[in-house]
Image (cartoon, rainbow, N blue to C red; front, side):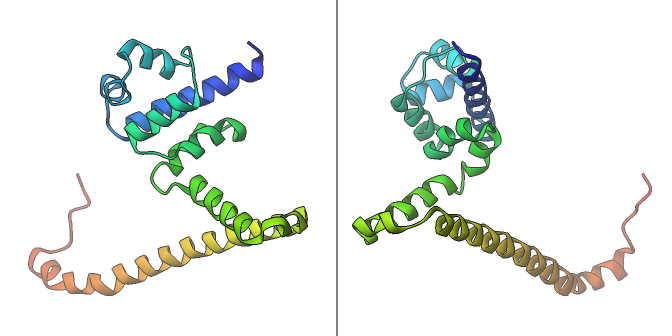
Length: 164
């Protein structure tokens, strides 16, 4: 096995273990959901087992996560990518979007230049970052405006004790 393949197995095993733990599932529970022996699953999670698309798909079905993100984390060299996409399915969403564009454009898809795709992806990433920043500001403003409703409780009970 090459060093690159070993690294990819380590990344994949780390992502699998992290997703299982995030889902608060035991190895035995995941193995049962996947229809494999617990020892087989343990080998898979340790990076010693055999991986196939079918097995990864069964893992993702058992843990309700994004199979495309799980496979992509090896390419990106980061198991956190799969974990962070487990709930929002970002990788699958982007693949479906580009697949839809391919369907819509048909042969004209060939006319898309790499520069155009990079610019579009960068704009989409910037839009998502801006959305999150606005969401955080909205949440902070909402909490600040509504915290005044707690003033009667503060007057009644005093300020919270900060000394422990």
